[in-house]
Length: 219
Image (cartoon, rainbow, N blue to C red):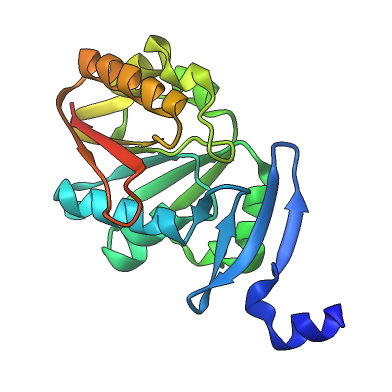
């Protein structure tokens, strides 16, 4: 019976479910295409995709001025897809992803090889920015384990390094969530810290996903 249900009602079952060293991930069908989901949130090509589409639009991001882009928390490539395939950016993109199985799923289901000028680093984002050189025009931060941001990404050291490796006039987009009381408290504390290092701080949120907040700033 289960096999028949999967055959005739595939949208109700994961295409693949995988437990990695960090969490459980699923490839699901949604609105006619594949998405990558964690247990409580979308990781790529679903709600998250719309969140960054809105954030880039609100910030009036000019992709023609981008040469080097850094995506911390690359996932299956949703942000890279917006920049290259939807916006026509020719910038070189460095994607940092700590979970190698996320990249394996991205290669398997989302044609990661089709991106041009893309370099993937399997690395911890905190350590990466500590040693990275200041070459980036755009930094996108989307560092979640399921719906939780590890606390070291809320520290002055991490924010200071983001600013250090961002070129003058460059933009940073930092995705946050504010579902629970604790999330909201952390987000308020993060905003206070973020404003200590960056001027022109704004934020973006979509009507459909109001608990997702993307903070933006220009160096």
